[in-house]
Length: 214
Image (cartoon, rainbow, N blue to C red; front, side, top):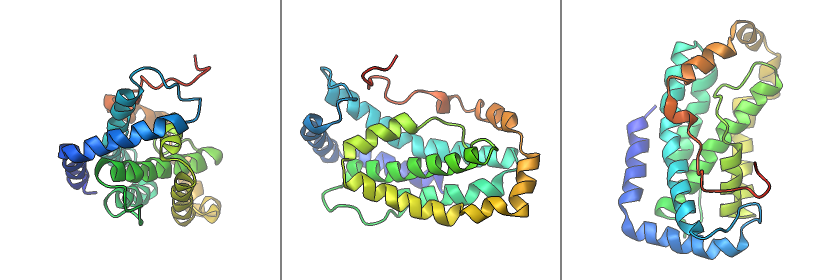
């Protein structure tokens, strides 16, 4: 895993003042089209900018933590291929729209990475062995899906689905190796290991309110 390259890419994009200004303009144009579940409160652009920066910055943090946990919990065989694809989505993404540059391009790439982890986690949960990475990113991913808009966000979801089919095909859960993994895995051990990474438990975008949410 090349975590330093991921962080350098984030730092580069953040240092580009023109890119930040372009992202702000893009957000202001997107606000009227956002799903009503995202409350357009006063200061929405600033809140969304903070949310986007946190969402992007969590990619290298999550991948670094996941690699450490994989080693300690002896689930490297299961987790490393997922982490490598998530890293590739961030460093060598599929073709993106020509006008998505700087931070906006990183938002596309972060969405691919976070959605990949979410989908793989869901597959493992369905097969009754707990998530590989016990982090709740669904709400944040839904917000980004709305920000990016359709059909583009659906195209990114399709890219994720193709990657998941290759990484965790249904046949994987029928094999002896998976059954052996399922017999020895201790989800509580994984959760305790993740607790050592307190930054991973922080709520993303606390200013973004869902209508009807508690």
